[in-house]
Length: 469
Ligand code: G6P
Ligand code: MN
Image 1: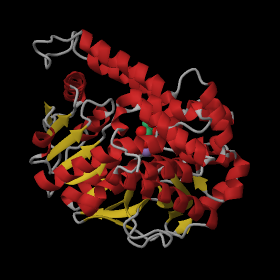
Image 2: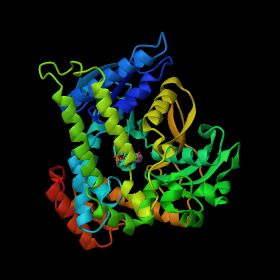
Image 3: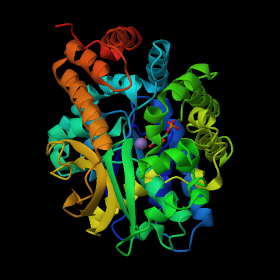
């Protein structure tokens, strides 16, 4: 089976490759094509994968199947032809773009974050035209391929692609599975993977309203026990009182809504934004790898075997330890614990999804797919995040309990914003882009929205397509 990874020079590609290496079953991925615009990033990541395969061989069981063969290319069409699965994890504008998304918003006094609020809208405006171009090419060059979208803002980008690929594009995020797993573990559920999560919303905007073990909802036990409630990441982030008021466990990204003022203050006071921090951190990583490289033979092994892997693993650990650090600081939530650090692992969600489709192994995963009537407040084509049954025919959302008034209000408001971003992306209308900013619950004035668009236009050449009407 052939997997193509778009954004193949990206930092998290070794996570995906690691998941592939652990898969020994029949029908596993045998060929991986990495596509990226930047050959130096491709060469660096290819070296990490070479080290990774060597480590797996050294540690592996005898008779383990060979590691998936890796090929790199900067030609998108070539990368897509013949692919069974396309994994899209691109970052339009790079981490410098992410840092600018944050800065412009924070300078206006509103939230600057990769996926939420003004920053997420700017990132969406930049990404939608590129994602649509990819979707059109996949439809033409690899019409039978399944596209797994991890590109943020994942729900919005998946919806943009679904207009060209229908249900052949499926969005993934590791936040919901991580949340359900942490709650299950806190409650001492014997097999967390078997518990059924009543989770629904949009990507980075959902709530766990129930957790069923053998058809019994065990979530009330969490709310009845303040010590347990305070013991896991979301409990410390939101505080037990607020979780009890809600009666559900929100996705961690709802911290930006419920504690917006504190989050904005913390982000403005931080030495660096998350994007700026990751930009510098990753520049060091890619520079370190480029330094030991022979320009005449970019695929040659690292100076010392294993050095590329060590540099990558060190960088990854630091990234995970500092995830949402400002939010945790604002909430007095302390450092991340070992349990917090063990995320849902989007690479395992991706692998489970590919296995279910390719081998017709029926499973349930929380994914971003078209609503198809599950949430009555949204139309059929709206992409939502919801548990889905997956098999060879794809992913179908399962019935969940309906949203409360508060949840429905937020979901409808943010979906309306997403629709403005999609309209702007398709028509090039600056008016739609201003509307997207202005209608967002975390942007407090139309004037602010107008200035935001001007600020982002100045910062991003990729927004040049937006025309004043
Ligand atoms: C979570 C989110 C992802 C995000 C990731 C890394 O897993 O669900 O959407 O990409 O965190 O965040 P970072 O701030 O390290 O880029
Ligand atoms: Mn996510």
